[in-house]
Picture (cartoon, rainbow, N blue to C red):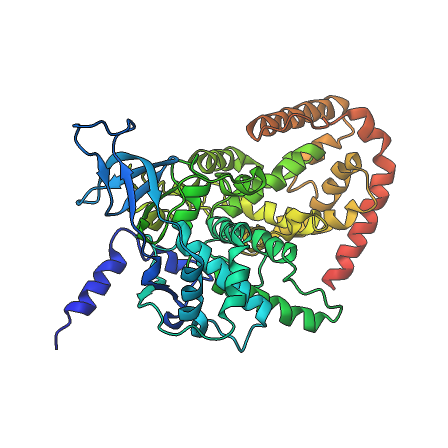
Length: 498
């Protein structure tokens, strides 16, 4: 038996880290072949670009090219050389625009590739529109895409096609926004909805367009949300994240694409700032959210003046260094970096990054508990990454302490928390807090000074400008009420252990 094809498949899996995305939970399996976009040959259009910024002069060599692949990087177009390297820059790209008849033919060949039984006519129209505008804008036919098939033009146009074509003609901006939503969601999470209910930008787009269910019956709403999510996935999945990011957010040096322009390419985009801002933050990439969300929780503690109470506070410098790595490198540190950067025209390298590094793992785990227990009523308290961090890496004592402090927070002033914390932990495992609460004035003053120095150091490391320093007089004034709260908490804790 000839195993050459099988061996080639195995080799591709192990080459250049292409298999790494398969290690992520919830990996996107992609569209079924039967749902790939069908591109009729009528959409293959002649195009031309010049390798010189100067207009052609009579008698001068012709610098025009009209075939091959094009790199998009840094807001510029480049010819792709035969060996895959980046060639000369291209200027004045021109391509013939699609016609209304082209739209009709596109709809005709794609009618059977959308699950009509699952979606109503309104939803089917915007699925077709999003896929059409993605195909003719340069989002679909890239070296990183394989969810399209070139087919012959249809000989017959079925009834009902004109109504869909009319809708498509006026839905370009909405369709492009849907593709942008898909790309930004993928950039942050390594998938765009998939089998999960749409969230973030995709969900907001669906809500804005009126496709998100609002039924008061929760079960009906959930079914509608799953159907809307499935429709969004089907509509946008063939849009290459490389092409969307490279064309719409060219300021990030890691954003690039290699596009086959014969199906269409729009080199210049007028993208609203509200959309761009979701595409460019370097901290918004997959595989780093435990670190980035932990820093959000830590900054919140600093602003309350409570950060030095963390059991694993001695790991804060390692966490700050990891966060700076993400801030500076973005996609290079993401879990999909190997795949995304493979083929980059400037050979941008991947930066090894482990969001569970032992140098700061316990601190991230403890901050996961802080988020889910102490800040449970805030948006950071809903972070899936920190919920996982709390379950996987938080020390048991930290989990117990911040759970108790979360209960105390509802009726305790921030300055009282020091004494409450000290009573919960006990002197044997919290010498620093115990010294702050000492009856010895000298010892207490020195401990408060040390605490404030630690707080300042953490504030500087995570760039927090305003925070309350500990004050001996304030602590003394609140001691009696805090002790009463602590006694009540101890009673609750003891009752819970029985």
